[in-house]
Length: 162
Image (cartoon, rainbow, N blue to C red; front, side, top):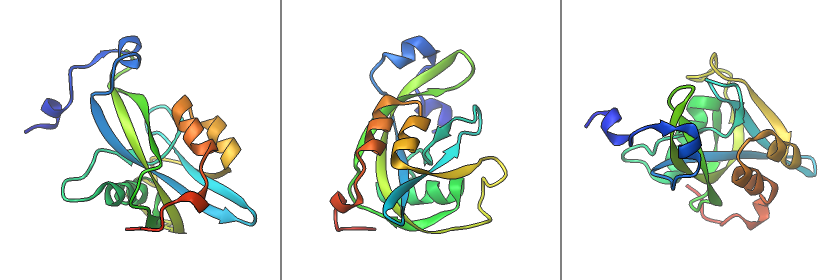
């Protein structure tokens, strides 16, 4: 089946923003301890340059956490450990062009970053930067994602990891 057949019909952005999610994506909330502070790694989107989490479509044959790790490596050079349980999800509109898109829901898995590779597949297409939790929450556009970042506490993460 072609990729186009997996995606629902596109709709005007305003309509897509108020429609129930029809697609699911996976994201990694990449974090580290810096002194007494928790920091989150954000990357720029390829199209608009907005600050976002590394995310993408679920990868056939991989679990949610494994898909999140793959996306985090490809988009940000992250090598780390993902938890088995998501910390939540947020809706967003996947844009197709300047006027159209479709609604998605993104499931977020925390990833404790152990190393950042200097070479990774999308290195020339994105910027990456560490932010304290409060600042990272202000940098992202989606209100629900902002709330997930603000409320992130690694001490409450499940002990099981991939």
